[in-house]
Structures are given as C-alpha cells and as structure tokens.
Image (cartoon, rainbow, N blue to C red; front, side, top):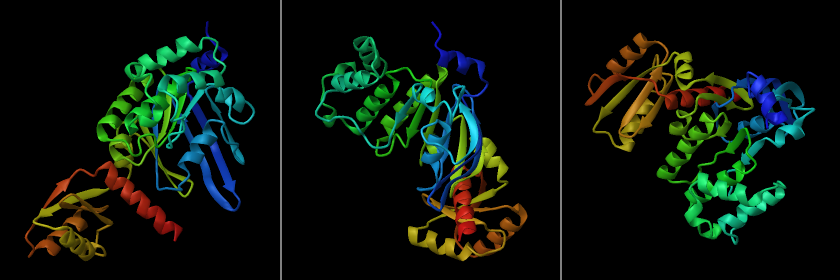
Length: 321
C-alpha cells in the first residue's frame, strides 16, 4: 500500500523546493534569503565555516524550524503549515552520539522503535541490524563501540521508520577514514533507493561524493551545483610550486606572494604551495619573476574544490569585515 507521504513525493519533481528563507536569532541574520532545490534520491552537501548557518538552513528546509519569511515544500508538504507530516518522513542524525551507552545495540533500536510506536518493532529492529551490518554486535553495549560502529547504530536508528529524507549533521566527525568510506557507500546505496540526503560536512573528499553542493557563509548561499560546476563558476587558475621546502619556507614564500599582482590566494598542500588567481597571464608572469632565482619548480594544476572553498571563505570574510 502506498502511503500519502510516498504518493506526494512521487508526484513532486523535487524532494525539497524552498524560496527566500530567512531566519533571525535576535539581531543575528542566521539564514539570508536561501533558495534551492533537491531532487529525490539526491545527496546534497552543505559546506561552510562553523556558525555559517548550515544546520539552521537544513532544519528550515525540512520543517524542523519555522522561517521568519520565505516558503517552500519538503516531500510534497508545506514547510510551515504541514511540518508535522514532514517530521514523520525524516530521519535526523546529529554529530553528537545521543544513544544510551548502557544499553545494547538491539535495546537502543528497540527503544527508538517504541518511541515511533512502530507496530512490528521486532521485525523492524532485526531488519535494521541486518541492513547496517550490526547483527553480530547486536548484544554489545553501545558505550563500548568505536566511533564507526556508533555511527552505524545512529544511522540504523534513523532508518527504523523508513524515512524518505535523511538529515545528517557532520555525521563522520571523529570517525576514521575506513569507517567514513563505508558510511558514504551506505549513503549512496540509500540514495539509489530514492532516499534524499542532506548532509553537512567539513571534509572535501566527502563533499566530492555528493551529487550537489551548497556553500554557505554568514547565512548566505554563495555557490551551489555539482563539484565541477562550482569549480568552473569561479574561473580560477592555479599553479603548484614545489621544491625542497619546509613548512617555514612555504610560509615565507606564501608571504612574499601574498600581495603580488594576479595572486588571489596561496595555500599549502603537503610539500607544495598552491597559488591561485583569476588572470592566468598576470599570475604566471608574477610567479616566474618571483621564482626566477629560487630553487623551486612551478606547474599548472587543476583548481581543486578545496582551492575554491578556501577562496569563497576568504572572500566572505573580507566582505564581513
């Protein structure tokens, strides 16, 4: 049987479609005129500095927080007048592990199933244990789990009531790389089933795994699109400078180049210095003149997503000052 929520999602082109959302906390404009769209089965990543409005934006779009102005729909429901219906179809996973550490994995999931008043708790819990690879650890106390396994438990709990939208607030913070990779493979498996995912992250490798991205700073949306679209839209050119450089010499070279013609930014990447600008001719001329008598090599390199976000962050900070 198709539920009302499912049928409305199927009739809608977008899982989320919001326009002109604004939110103030006191005098602080936390979300500033946010408009964007998320398709069913899309993993949409939110990036930006701490306190930039990422989490508040996600909550506004999903009816968990009421905007001061603006409108939109989520899963076919109005985000203001039908927020209760949205909440029943959303799974929310916070950065902080918030389950009972003195209960086993199975007991935690059973408790969550009771909260949702699920009619067949046992079947739902066993299905979640199986789907997230938790079966063999079902009787292990949550407090003894590593970060990666706690993460799996949290995701299993999110999925118990079979939501069509997942909200993930920096879900992999403090988790080792292997566990992060496994987690993202699971997200793509869920997305392939038509589940939409909104995720905030600080990791560039995770950002590149998203279907679409949004960069938010000081409550304003500065860029959105695929990773490639965002990189191309900034029209940046980057050179990598390499040589026998220590951290100290990298810093010194960065300081020398900082105010040179054509140089927008410099950033250390391992034992190389990335130098970025908008005018490729002026930038190359500056670099060749500066490095003429230095034992360094320079080569054009693709502008990375991280180069772009460093640029967006610094630009936003400059405008705020």
